[in-house]
Length: 232
Image 1 (cartoon, rainbow, N blue to C red):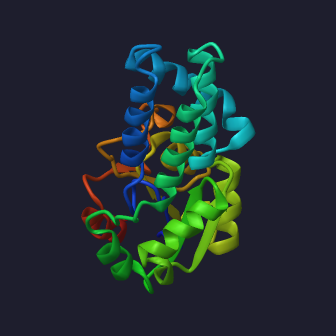
Image 2 (image 1 turned 135 degrees about the vertical axis):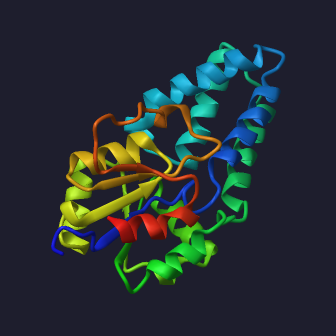
């Protein structure tokens, strides 16, 4: 049937492999470095505010996160942050880049099952170099028909990607852990949005559950995706 999905888009971070947990661990390390200047909760709040301000300048990813940590350290210490702390922050950012990629349960099996039946597209946002690194280390790259690394995920970006790599958004399914980035704009573009919740989700990716949306679905894990897609 012409209305059935022909293309499936997958988010990467915290959908196919672990990501947010490394940011949380680094943030804990960061708040510890500034323990003499402010309470951990205060430091975390200031860091989130810096990240929010800096998204338009640095985009998503480790580089922007590291720069936001440095900016926060300068603010919290009233420009008295020791150079040794700046060095520790930079080392923490490098450690995030060096951390092995850990595919999530069911990721490979699900992609292998769907590949060949549908066009499979990886749609991720963030730093180009870092996202390419993670895809290469994941060992999943060969399962995708196309890879799109975008600066942000919007209705327009989904319309463009699914028109270029499929039969348009109306016949596309977008799968991801973020209601804000993966689900809502895909629904706005006319596609299906499948939410796969992760235990950890960045505060700036939180959003409300879409209401009265027949093309919205939620599954507990990727192992439930194949029967859902086959039933659409």
